[in-house]
Image (tube, rainbow, N blue to C red; front, side, top):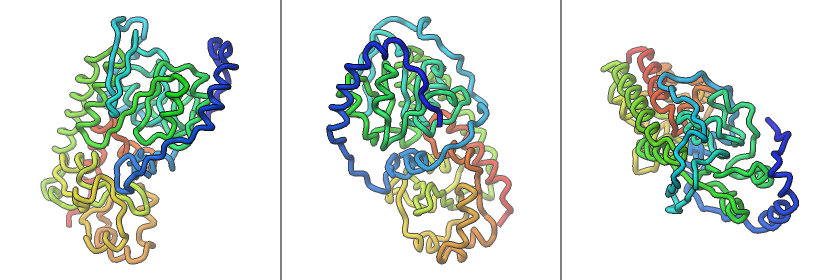
Length: 351
């Protein structure tokens, strides 16, 4: 894990005052949100938070190559417009900035990826422990995660804004210390599009969001065209954690599968990322099973799962850990994720 080895001059001047404030903040109890285990940024807490945070919290993976459509140039804060910027986060809280933030901390992988895809990678000064894409972020200070953000180190970096998930326990403490925290929650494709627009406005490059979303849409359409007609309509069980948690029809992963013409074995009424009874999965007999490869390998050893016909007939899509992380992050690589799912569906043997 990368460590913070230097603090800029401004932080050194304020260290005594900051330390006192931090002590008070750390003594104050953190607000604990009650999260339905089937919710999407709960735990992914969704594949980043419930079942998404669960995924982000359990894995650190190798950075992936830039996907097709990643064409954003790094933008300099000094070349950005100087008019005041006001954005409203997913709590309904309005944040105002005299200029586009030049120092950003991101505490969620999908938000790190979104900032970089919009051209703001050079403005990141710290990230959560699981952010790993693009490669430019690898050398940044690692500042913890949803449950254990390192408050003192974040404050010492003097960020203009901290990007966090709704379930992050550090938000109130950081705000009590005078930091601006932008809370963003993405559980659907529409959420991802909205989040990209919000972040693009924050960065002072509002036109970048439309460009990036257009590239995502093009990849989604290309992916749908790759799925064999004989596969369309088959029911997919997509596992996001071995409890098991699944990506239901209401999740962003479920939406991607629907765009590919696939059905979901887990109905929308169960929530975006529900925790399932293992016997339920055997009972519904999905046509295709998708998961990280190590779980695909372990599934036949789960009680009763050897009776899953999809496993018996090898109708499975097992993904290497690094590629799998891309699939379960609601961010700018949605299109590339769809192409990866389509490639696997195209390679499965006919029934």
